[in-house]
Image 1: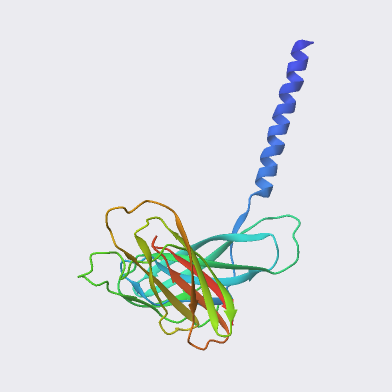
Image 2: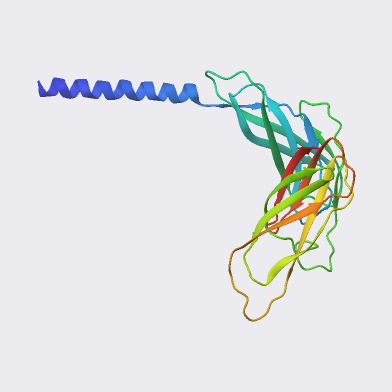
Length: 238
């Protein structure tokens, strides 16, 4: 009797395991290519920067989730294939917006042609400059540590930057906004550090409002540089 009970338990465990494996197999998402509605190519990258291109688009329903991107760099051409995870199952039939900063890593100085798979969008060229050999720091400026950005007024546009300094001797000096380039506005929050006795390692949250003097109309990317080598990207209709 005991052996029969053990046999039945073993069979239940076996069938449960097989069923679970099939369930996992059925629910595993597939990687599929996805369409892109807009491509933004920021200016200001040097050959020692992590170069970025920002894309956005719409998934046809809620079964699609943001995935990685395949990147091919050949000579002076960059081909980007955006991917999404597709989950089989019940889905809401509604458009789902996505946006993503595609990291291209370090690129040699030059002018690159950018191609996005499965799209006929005309993408502006990606320009990467040679870093100043006399500058020992990774960036041209010491950037403030920006965590988020938002548009708080549209006429004229006012951009609110938020972040936190981690040293009491660091503060915001100025924010430079060069002329826009192909619907992209570069924002350079330049900080200053005056090392002296009494500097403390403390969190110092800050906000900085930046008025954009240039007249902008349409959909724009605000590409804000940050201390950690990344950037904060904000896409807005103006």
